[in-house]
Length: 117
Length: 117
Image (cartoon, rainbow over all chains, first blue to last red; front, side):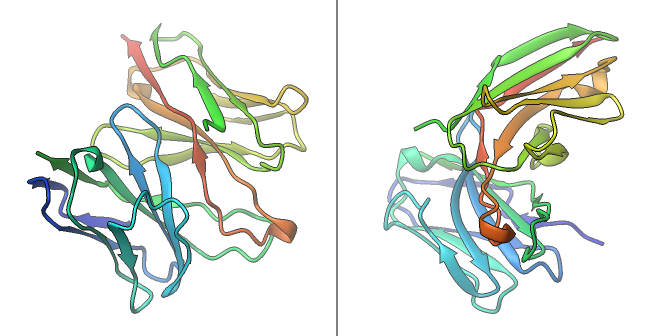
């Protein structure tokens, strides 16, 4: 079966442009996460969806960042009026929902590298 | 606030040697500690993980050592191979009461491992 896929793999935007990054999670995975990975750093949590519900958006750095998952599968991370500091790799991960003590592994996609000029 | 601190930033070992990467955490509520391996252009992939009720976990050439009182954990790679050359991230999460948390990961800054033939 296919893993998590993300598109585009690379995106170059001029400062001030809006961008949309897509994530296709593993089929049947209820949980979906977005992380931001700056160059030379570890991923940082942005937001979490359980099905179509956005349960945690505490990591979104500003109101220019918006994420949605309207049908509980594909998710889109949108960044409005991009700034140079938004340049990073944006990672999507999915997992089975966990209602027990056992942690369900997060499977990461390859990421979208966003460069804002 | 850096909740998980990782060292060293980079590490060079010879083939057959032992690679050791260390992490320290601050939040005593963390109760699950995974290590991720990331190759260039790929997303992180789970390598091995430990819960704080054990002091050591071994899977093949990879071992996690955990020191709850010191709030530290480390990854040991025995008989390091050139194919192990990658970036390694430690991470931590709080699984919530009765495992109800969805799995928001906090990552360290990463260690670039290079294994020379």
